[in-house]
Image (tube, rainbow, N blue to C red):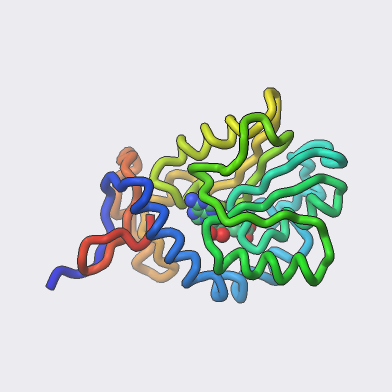
Length: 207
Ligand SMILES: C[S@@+](CC[C@H](N)C(=O)[O-])C[C@H]1O[C@@H](n2cnc3c(N)ncnc32)[C@H](O)[C@@H]1O
């Protein structure tokens, strides 16, 4: 019987979407347990180093702006942006992650609209938003990040701002494994094909 494994190979958008939605649904509670305290409930932290939007001001003025958070997870960032007076929509592929967003929105009574959607096919017309942002949402978890860039460009007004934090591409020369196995470089930095974990049948489980 073939074994599950990790490789670099092309995958289709539906394969990527199916794999990542399942993966994030099944990891949602663990992710929030592990990172929830660090992320806060009404706060926008850009990265594991802890840089906060309240200090960095990367998004520019927010009062009265229309803002989208792409890959919002539990949407602590969207709530913080709403608290600054913006009109915010948080989108995410995973219903499991969005369950945490809805619970926290109810608790904090902040007007954040939550939508389940794929960052590669945003369900909005052109020029809807002044500002788009994400802290590690969606961009590192799609087969074609260029497509996410084009979608964000489309839904932003001309001159709109897109701020995103992602892992350095160097990350994908390693296995996505927090243990020792993840400390060994196994892929070429110059391989531009998606990083794909697959099951016994060869179907992608994480892209
Ligand atoms: C590392 S988490 C970051 C979540 C949140 N930004 C935070 O800082 O906690 C990555 C998020 O991207 C979402 N995601 C993955 N692929 C996506 C896609 N194609 N479209 C939208 N969201 C996606 C996942 O469901 C997950 O919530």
